[in-house]
Length: 194
Length: 151
Image (cartoon, rainbow over all chains, first blue to last red; front, top):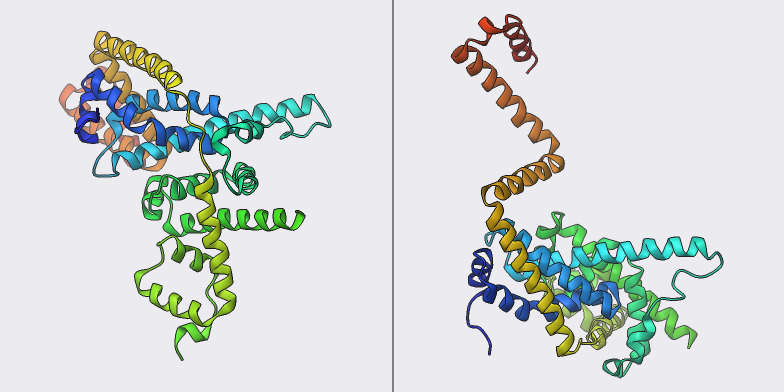
């Protein structure tokens, strides 16, 4: 059964300690939050962990959310992207220290791309291209990665991202363009090698 | 000379047009330019295909059972936190307020120093006159005089 309560009602309920309201918020947003986390972290199990942590962070930071500043979903997606980036950064550090321990082994040799390749959900046309896009997104600088995911997958407008990130619209436009351009170049190289 | 004949559009402008973020007044111009310019049209098509391809990036959905387990853990966490807040009451809110103030101070050091300076100046004036601190601690008056000059 889908709740007819607005996000604002559910936020208010959550703040007052209403478990039903918080549970509804989770059901309503678990998928988009998980998708955002997955696209940044690129590992299903870790993205689920991150999703759970994001919702914990969510109810703890709800008192600072202001509806005048941003729509609830916009604010939540930014929270999700930031947390996922932190998670991804921590994992990358672990991978780098692993590499320094096992000299000669590539940092990305053990990276779990295979997981999605084996998944039946990934049996789609152009799968190799999607994998190339994933690989490229994983190597984007943090801001570019965040803007890329928030714009293309969470469908936030560029001015909303600029406001949430506290940076200029020009910076966001340039970040998105550079990210997309990197992927375009990677796809060209990829096609050239086939 | 009309704009679409004067120059090629940058890749960034073409991308913004594809995702509907170009300025409304330039959309018609870009569209007209693309009709006439093969070079820009091919770049535009390449970016448009890339943006379309992003839709193929499917996220493997966890099973309902996995979601249920996660939700149960989360709700348990929420319950414990609420209980903790209820028990701590005012103390928790004070701590939360102090942390927020600290975060603000770290992020905005200059305005914070300004607020502190204004508060010290105000407090020094009021404290001396109301509580006659200069009677209790003879040097206090000198210190505040010095502070007032500095601030």
